[in-house]
Image 1 (tube, rainbow, N blue to C red):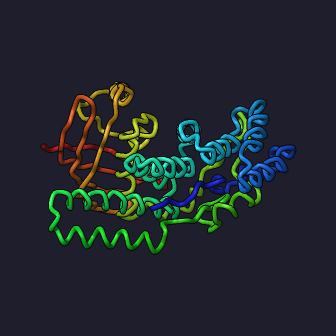
Image 2: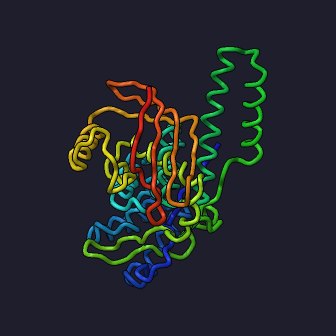
Length: 339
């Protein structure tokens, strides 16, 4: 199985503040095209040299940092690439593409849980982001194949597991997995090589710290977050942010009027949550039996079984979240725990 190849540009926003890269940095527009061509032809060393030269005087430029992450990935320097894409998700959590590229790297390392978490965050950011949905399907299929394989190790005569495993393998043998790599905006349909040679992606808006990308097609996601699927995606992305130990992303899922569990002040509750999320050691939050009830267009209830694991605690609980719709997002207003 292989996921869609790395994206080479940010998704476009229709807002007036988003400009063509050449209009923001005219001296670098030609260099950016040269870099894409160099990467496409496998000449990553000179591409990286050009990028580092530019970042020496423009260290906050998100678009060029994103390109650097791609070049490092092409060079097999995955640790450094992960650092760059991770930093971009923290600074620009509204952009889905860095999450997608993190997922591609994690999947190539066999870290499918991390890949799943990253893709769920990408989908929460941009619910109509087809590439992330397709990649998430591939990751789920790989996780399923591992489970079926384990079942066969325990019972070689399990014909049901054999059939399911064979079906998944046949599927990926025929399709080769997803292979679309949009350049510049989500689901443009370009291949990996075509994306590299495409015109510079449009995704930067000037601010005090330098070029800042615009939000990724916020209008496109409004309808996708209204129904029950949007609510379920929100809850899965909330669990992914928790597992990723990203306090800012995690807390962003809670409404301003969230009812804290013990009636404590919101600031105190947030302080406690940040403290727990930043403790050393991994956290895993897995949801199953997710059931969504949308009572009206602005209110929903989600019930599920939550399996939580950290270095010093393991628990399984039945949990219910109450959510209200705010603009194009669903936000948590109350948590209820049983068992």
